[in-house]
Every structure is written in C-alpha cells, then in structure tokens.
Length: 188
Ligand SMILES: [Zn+2]
Image 1 (tube, protein in one colour):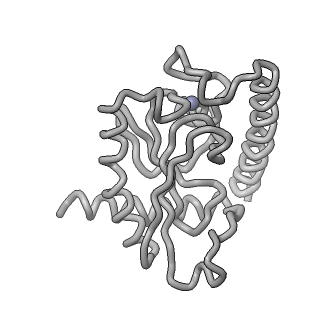
Image 2 (cartoon, rainbow, N blue to C red; image 1 turned 120 degrees about the vertical axis):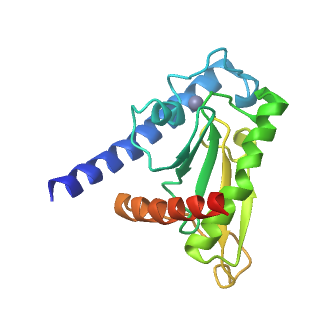
C-alpha cells in the first residue's frame, strides 16, 4: 500500500513540478523577449529541463529503452495507451540545434519502437510527431519524438483524441508490454 501511495505522491510531484517549470520557462522567455527556439543550450543538460531531470534520475519516469545516446519514455499524458517519447540523452531544445547525424540516429529508433508499440497495444496504425517551439505546441523544450498508436474508432469526429492522465501503475504495465515486444523485434 505504501508503494502505491508513494507513486501517487511522486506523480503529483512531477505534475506540479512540470507546471512550475513551465511557468518559470514562459516567464524567462517573456523577460528575454526571445522565442524559445533561439535559446540554444550551451550545455549537455539543462537544469530547468524536466526531461534532463528524468534522464539524470532526479525525477521519476517510466522507461522503455535506454542506450548511451537515447531514451524512450512513456508519455505521462497519453493521447492513446502506448503513447511514447523518443529523445536524445543530450539536451537540444529543437531539431535545429541537433547535429543532422544525431537526428538520423534518433529517427532510426522510431520504427523499431513503433513496431513494438503497435504489437503491444494491437493498434491499427500510429502517428509520429515532433514539435519545435511554443508556436508548434512544444511543451518541454528538449527534442522528443511522439509515437502515438491509433485505432479505427479513436476519433469519431476526425480530431485528435484528448490527452488523458495515466496512473503510474498503468504506465509501468504498458511499458512492460512494450519492452517485451522490443526484445521480440530484436530477436527476429
Ligand atoms: Zn533537457
């Protein structure tokens, strides 16, 4: 029971932390009068970046895959179950700050992860999305690729399904299913 309570508290902490982070971020941007995409990082890690904090193990995140260059996480606010984020370990705010060869390596991970997700959730299709800048709806300024599984009946009105809050337990269970499929993909 204490484990459940602890994870709930952690989830709330991250949610509150993200909101505080976003408010600070928007304030800094307003103060500097610079669009978010011109503020290139000079360091490997941004102290204000929630993804860098997760990568450093300072904030919880549900991991699916990690190597020395890239991390794949479950999205805490998924559009559909199985929604994941593929990101570089090194902090780049947008794709324009990332060396093209690194962009290539990032995207080379996407089909393998997408295949595992589709298999794990029995999706009918999937979207791949990557936002750059506030105008493009980039919420966390650390490059990340969304992989969103889609289902024939998930959008009766033709719009994006709404994002939802997912429990830590559901995220961990989903990550476990996807991880099993990744090992199957690799063994073929
Ligand atoms: Zn970062």
